[in-house]
Image (cartoon, rainbow, N blue to C red; front, side, top):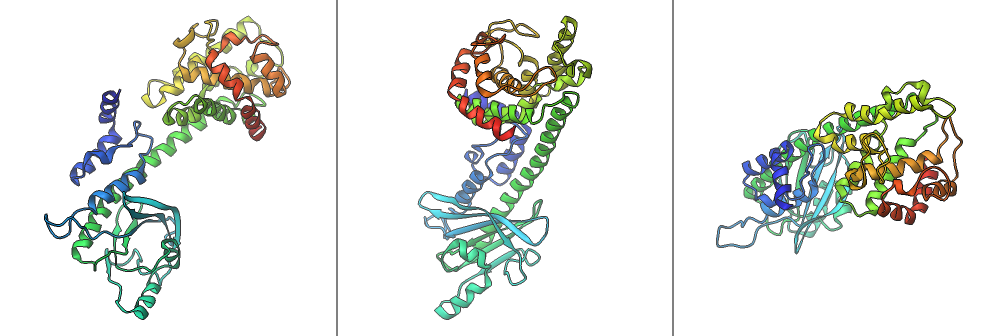
Length: 405
């Protein structure tokens, strides 16, 4: 399994881009642990940054015979926001096991009195004065928000301006020894590395946001002719992710199903509104036409690897575990797990919701039907393991419906 995952990552363009940066900067391969398996998902950037910090800042300062590096006790990584007056980012602290994040999302307004104005020189090196009075005055050079977060007097520091998109600055504080040009070069190496990663991550984020917008637009388009659906697609996303998490599925699986479950009825774009809005039961021909929305959904989503889960859900969310469903009569584990999950989420929500042909049902009535106590839906239509899990999670489902109803 490990080899298969590694091979998959090596074929991924996103992963190869990060690997190229690591190779060019001569950083060890374990920095790549935690990278995404899909190009539209971001790696754990903070994890990567702390590893890079540990590697770059652990280099001995005084040659091979020395084991001690002049490393800062604190490090801030700040990005200039679109308003061009606010810096926002994270603060790291050096501990026994290397650097770790101590504050995230720290926001600092870039006031003129702040020493680290991004419009000034790239390298910033400051040694604190030795006498207490001058040291106290030295603190005024730094932004009060930084002083508050670090919680101790600021001493020797080195900073470097990061060029790229987004623009930013990385600053090391409280070096145990006086800072030198060497420390500035180390910080420059760190800034170049982080800037390269951040620029690539920024571009991937834009792609991901466009991808999510496309999915949501398609999902909404599929409901344009389906009256009274309300927040149906939002609830189905939430129900599906909740079930996946309750099953202890991998985080990536849970996140993906929580996004693409809403695509289950995308094929209804091709279903005539006279059928979707019919106030009474459908006749045989109308049912046949309605059932085509599963195959239409499969066709709309195509063969893009990133849409594999969405496509399987769209095609198979009306398959029954006992083999009596449509469109292909799949049975048992022939049905993709994601489709089994969305089927249960969709049935519960459909029973609870108003439709042109029925009134909404209360929670308990919907449960009676799903568990075959009342109604035409059979418990055999669902994976028994999944149904048992649903039985344990019915209170959560009720709360989700009431919250998003």
